[in-house]
Length: 431
Figure 1: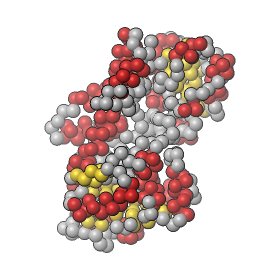
Figure 2: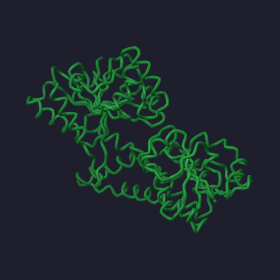
Figure 3: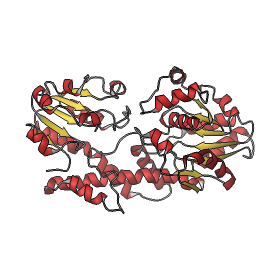
Figure 4: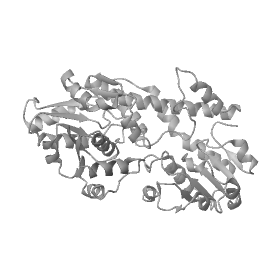
C-alpha cells in the first residue's frame, strides 16, 4: 500500500518505519525542515533501540522516504496517518490544533478516495472533528474520504517490538468495508484485532493509560503505608501481582509516572469526562498521589541532610524511564530543581539523555560516568533504573563519595547488600 504519515515525532517515525518494513511504500512528512533534513542524513531525532537500523534499511530499499512536501505525499497515498503532537493545555484539555492543521492540509490535497487515520492520542469526538474540518475545507459532502481511529500502544524503549508484536490492534471505523482495509494493512502481524466504532477506539487509548497510571499511584500509596508500618513493598507487590485478576505489571513502587503519555492522557480524560458531565474523582486522586511523590522522596534527603547548602548530590538517571532520551515530565527535573532551590550542587549522569537534558537543566554538572558522578558526592540519588546501574563497583563508589549515602527512588538494589558495603541506604516502601 502507499501510505502517508504526517508527523515525524515519536509515534510518526516508528509508525512509518514499521509499515515500510512490512513492505509498504511510506512517505513520512513533516513541516519541520530541520528535522526532515536530519532524517535524510540518517540521524534520528529520538533515541529508540532498533529504530535507526530499521529506518536505514527501508530507506536503502526505497520503501521509506522523508520530506516536507505534505500535499504531494497525501495526493500519492491511499491511507494517511495523522501522527502529530497533542499536548495538554493548562486546564488539562488536549490541544488539537496540530490535528486540525493536518486535516486542513489533507482537505486541500484530496484527489480521490482516502482513508484518514487518527493515530495521535486524541479525546473522544476527534474523529468527528477531523471529518468536519476536511468536509468544510474541501467543500464536499465527505464522500471522498473516511476517518478511522487507530490508537498506538507503544512503550518508549520498546516501541519497535510493540509495533511488530502488539498485544492488540484497535480499529475504530465507520463501516466494515473501511475496517477491512486497515485489517489488510495489519494482517501480517498476526495480532488480535478489535473492530469498534470510532468513539470507542478513541476512548480505549485513554482508558488504558489512565488505568495503568492508577495502578502506579495505588502501589505508591501502599508503599507509603509500608514505610510507616515497617512492611516491605517488594513483598506486598509480588503477592499482589501473582493474583491473576491484578497482574504484576506497573506495581513497582517508586517516584510515580511521568513521560509524554500518562500525565497528559490522565488529565485529558478528566477534562473530557467533565465536559460530558462525569466527575472522574478517582482519576483526580491518582493525579494528586502522583504529584506528591517527589516532595515525599526529597523529604527523605532533607531529613538526612537538614542543611543542604553546598551539598554535592549525584544524580544517576535523567530520562523519565530507561532506554529513552525523553525528558518530558521526567522526575529528575523536579528532584534537581527542588535540591538546587535550597543550595545543593548537582552532578548528573545518564547513558543517553544528557543532550536532551542540557536545555532543560543548564546549570548542573554533567558527568561521563557514574563514578565521576559519585566523586566527592555527599549522596547519590537513583532516579532512572538503567540496567547499567545494577552492576556498579560498590567499593569504588563508596571510596569516591564524601559520604556513602544512597537514595534509591526505583528500589534497584538490595538494602542488606548496600549496607554490607558500608552505605546508608534509603529506598521506597521498605524499612
